[in-house]
Length: 372
Image 1: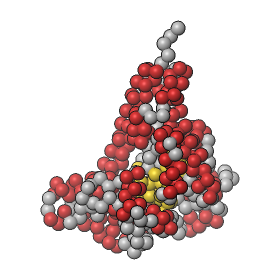
Image 2: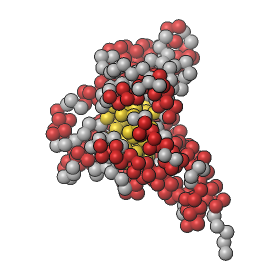
Image 3: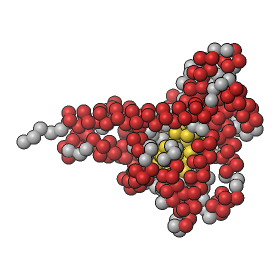
Image 4: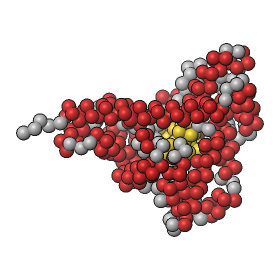
């Protein structure tokens, strides 16, 4: 057993768990992870809820009550997921209080079917914030083109946001711009900027999965030498962009008005390729004022054998740019890769949501009381 998680925290990386289920809440497991493994936040997504609710563990009574009330399947899912997020937020509330609102956060995502509808995303974000009704919630909005103005409007209303499904450096800059525009709106409305928080979830492992697949198709030794380098390079250049934006004059005016920086969050940090070390996207992305949201397997691997050696992002930007340029020279178009990943990301979450709708509908029908 190492104390890698403690060292990671000391380097300024907030450790969030990328998972939630009712069983994890009621068994005391989440409280244990907070107490013993330096976990200071939780992220959820449609796939996580689909797995949790489909397992059925702990949801039977609430499903039976919802069936008795004859609610729609959409309402049932919202009642179930917001209940889990509310309970997790209560467990994390001491962390929230101790960190002045920076951590102790639980994220819940807008319906993924709304990813390309700005107005519906804004309405859903407002509804979720009202339903959960906890100050330590983050509403997840995808960084699609339609999501960007939604981020600005929701931040402008004083609702804290986790921007998700960011793959490209250009889109990340647009996300930061949307956040600053939202803060400017909130300031105009006379809101307390110090209460607004945001993270930008920059996805990591999926970039390697997509680019490595294209490298393998080329099959040359030159191409294979670049396997497993693109994702870390991409994330490190995202951090460089973060440093630039949050040292600008535009930012300084907001900071002077009490605003908080939007932290980069490394998402999708579970390694997909067994050829890579299972802590790759933790060890190689250590930088101050970041979040790493890990599936439990990655959390345990980091605790067991993570190599936390200080800041592994600063001073790497020239090499990171060279690595991405080398991939581009192979004929692998960066812009195409990141667009494919964004499209697939939205589709995967939508597919999980649809699976969740179907399985929940079946449970409601099974549990519906007989008439009479």
